[in-house]
Image 1 (cartoon, rainbow, N blue to C red):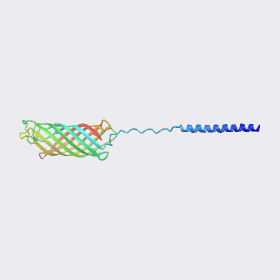
Image 2: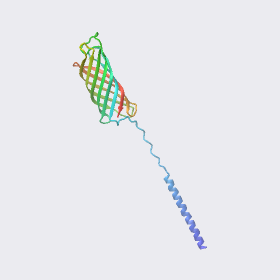
Image 3: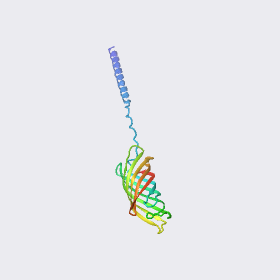
Image 4: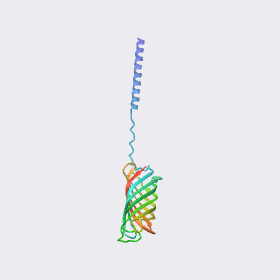
Length: 213
């Protein structure tokens, strides 16, 4: 009888121990399944491509020539520039362009009855380029280009005439973002030349595609 009671007591103790172990295991499993909420994602910041160190632009240009003597006239052509940035806002720009058109007179002697002349102008130079980059789709910028020009006049009485001159441009514009690497540029510059020992105060506008790389 005593052995039977002892056996029953042992069974009861074993049952309590097993039940306690099962409870601990269940609690541990429950603890493991608890998920900690992740922090809310930070708002996405718009990227304007400021990590790209190079800008290449190819544009149409209109140059309004004011020769001081005679009527003003327009030249149409193309323009290309390459800018290498040394930090997020400052770069060095190289620029070259060409424009063509008809002029009603020479630069030296204005004659209303003279036949129109065919003018071909090449411009080139370089200088600082400063841009303001932020989180918007627009990048305003400004530049100063120092260099020279070469103009060739055809159909003159003495035959074709070619003249070189110093020149500089001061102005700027804005680049409008089209994609991760592409922008569309709008630009306006004061464009000064020095032909025949006098300065010509010209203007030019440009618009075209800009690529970042």
